Image 1 (cartoon, rainbow, N blue to C red):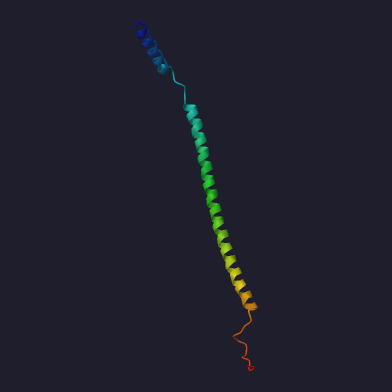
Image 2: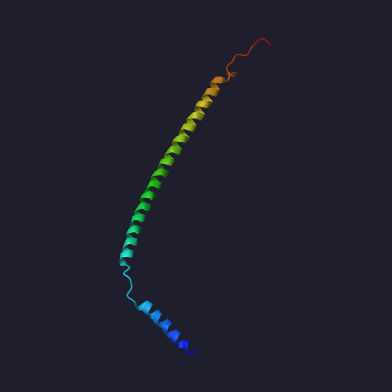
Length: 96
């Protein structure tokens, strides 16, 4: 039981000594992290701009694709019209 106060004082001393020691200067670490954060924010901004540019190009390509598909459909209809015999303008036969 006599050891209990002794252990308590040793523990308290170590705890206080650990808290009371001069702290490490964290400012250089904070500055380095802020610098990295700024660089990453710049990269994010550049990627956002690239994404917007690519989305715009995609919309343009899709519009061009739709235009080409529409033109292809019109040409296909025109070709099909040329292949079909025109029965409406053929004279009626008297050979019945």
